Amino acid sequence: MEQPSQDYKLIFEKEGVYLHTNAKRSNQDTTIPGFIRIVERGGQPALEWSPLEDEGRSAPAVLYTKKDGEGGEEDTKFDPGYEPDWAVISTVKKDREHVPVRDSGQWSFSLPLSELYSLRRARFSLGRNFLVLTSRGGHPLPALHFHRGGTRELLRALQRYIILDQSPVDGRLFLAYPHDSGALSQSFDKLQLLDDGGSDLVSRFIQDPYATTFGGFSKVTNFFKAALKPPDSTIYSRTQDPSLPPQPDEEPGFELITCGVELGPRPDIMRGQPLDKWEEFLDPEGRVQNPERIKELVFRGGIKPSLRKEVWKFLLGFYPWNSTTKEREDILRVKTDEYFRMKVQWKSVSEEQEMRNSLLRGYRSLIERDVSRTDRHNTFFSGNDNPGLTLLHDVLMTYCMYNFDLGYVQGMSDLLSPLLFVTQNEVESFWCLTGFMELVHQNFEESQEAMKQQLLQLSILLKALDPELCDFLDSQDSGSLCFCFRWLLIWFKREFSFEDILVMWEVLWSRLPCDNFHLLIACSILESQRGELIGSDHDFNTILKHINELTMKLDLQSILCGAEAIYLQLIQCKELPVKVQRVLGLYIPSTSEDDSPDSQASETQRILGQSQAGAASCDSARGPTYP
Image (cartoon, rainbow, N blue to C red; front, side, top):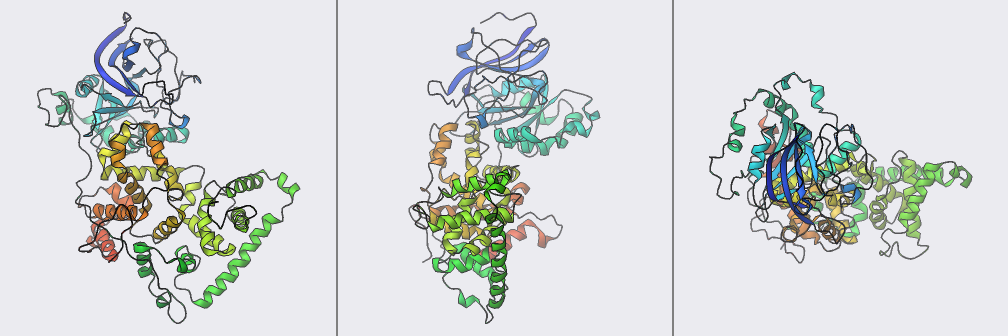
């Protein structure tokens, strides 16, 4: 090793700390042993990691930049071994004049402790302890795996320079604060509660949505706790006192932080038969007499194929549930006229006009490209010069006239094709599409805020259901669940067969049993793959590959049973976290007992008929049915 300079001081060192690189290149190791150190350079403390093989070898050191990027410049040659959207390090900083940094290898990093934003530690039963550190610029370091222990000693050494304050939301997450007696004098502006804008928020969310979100909720609480709590406060006593005995299942000298809720047993669920009668629900004038009962039957078993064309128009809002037969005839006539007026708008645009309308030209190009590859295996859209393809194209172009601000975004053709297949009608499929888009249009907005929110909500649910699975995904840089993006964007359209999607969508359109039931479906899929994921040596790349290869291999009925069972398990929890209640639409702030979340959950249980004594569990090979 090189000789330390005069202004270099080693404070802490631990060997056997591994970095999992998940490198793209096959000739690189994906697990690299190394040292973790706390050092002082020029009086400034920093946390450093370097590979074992790099001891004594010189190479540029990688530094995590400040949020404002002061003094830093991008090095386009740096390759962290990840796909661009998943890069752990976004910029490379040159050595600061006042804080020289020891040269080390490509995978090394040096993070000034003043730049440490949060620390999350976890331990799952089938793996070792690991830490995930996030800088104030929103960049998480790769998960550090302590194969030989030492996490508690590292935390104790860190507390010489910073305060690690436990988040009130998650016992595994700690926010870092300087030892600053004047902290209380900081203004709320400096807390930066609302500064997560632009690309920084996207980067932070993709890399570590957990710390980003929970850290934000904890800022005010921890601001006052850090300022007012004495150094010997009990929140730190266990970490600082080495005389306290470790728990039985801890590594020596490691405090195991447990998180999650105590959930009861997951009930067995069986699916019902499809809705196969329609006329009996209509009064003499054609009004639907019991729409809630119809929705319940649809949720339980879907719809008989011959009835879909009619029932879907009610589920998607084309016809009001209380409309008469005569009123529906009037609605169809008005909607038909409106549709063709919009269609004429784009049909009448000449080639010369379109050449001066780049937006319309762009929409048309995207639509033509996507139509040519949407569900071509289905006979309704197969072959060349198929009239079904023409209808698909025309409806999507007309939607651009209906909603020009949104226009056309890739994936919308996937939403339309089942509607067109079932209705076999251009006008009806268009208005059903507008109803469907009312539910999911935010998925296609350029900001992607809705998609980020759904991924966060999915993370909240999964952490309540299976913290161990979440810990494993976190340890493999997959905790953001971005591999579920396509599932949520187009409601699992490409994960199941065409016929299965018809059933799944009508189940979701029933809006039972709760808000965001599609997120519980995602949880059900992930839990069905739990053994395959945790019980193997998957890394980020192979996790992504495995999820993508689930296409057409999932059993719909089992997944739906699992999703409903998860819902029932959650609402039966007496101390369900408010965040989970909000995701499921159960949380209603009120002092009235009748409006409490528990009573809301009980009412939903009653509607769905939860007392199913002797219900059979789902069979993994085929969908369950009622006796």
